[in-house]
Structure formats: structure tokens, C-alpha cells
Length: 92
Image (tube, rainbow, N blue to C red; front, top):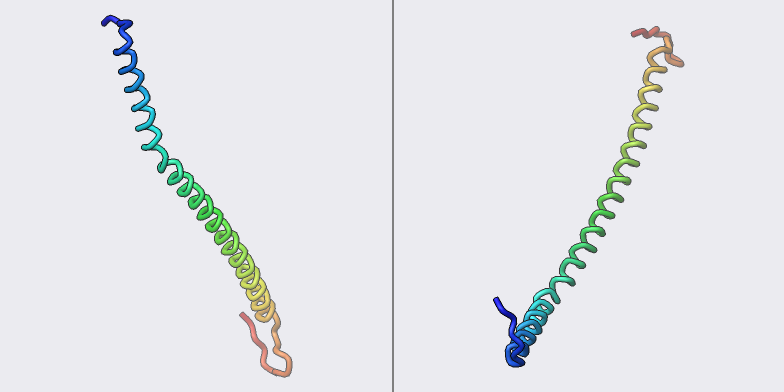
């Protein structure tokens, strides 16, 4: 392969190069916006999921606290042999 110094060939090579650049720019112009929008929507969705998860964890922590308190009150009531105002003795 020999590289010629003919000006017409050099102009054709330059025009083909510029055409390639223009096609590349036009093909990627809309793609940049699309991936940026998808990325921002994905990060927003991830933040929403993290917030929902934190709320759910807080809810289950308070629910578990209430259940433990209820269980301890139930155990204390079972340990008490007499109910107030009741002459009956209860045991396990």
C-alpha cells in the first residue's frame, strides 16, 4: 500500500474522515441524554427503595418492641398467683 501525495486523494480522505465524524456525532447525540436520564431515574429509584426499606425496618423494630413488652406483661401476669379481687389461685 502506497500513500500518494495527490491533492485530490488527500481531499477525498479528509472528506471521508469528516463524514465519519459527523455520523458519529449524530449517532451519539441522543444516546447521551438517554443514558443520563436512565442513570438519574435509577439513582432516584434506589433512594426511594432505601427510604422504604428504612421505614419498614423502623416499623418492624417498633412492632418487635411492642411484642416483647406484651410478652413480658403476659409472663408477669402468669407468675402472679392471684388476680386482684379474685379468690382463685392460678398457676402454670
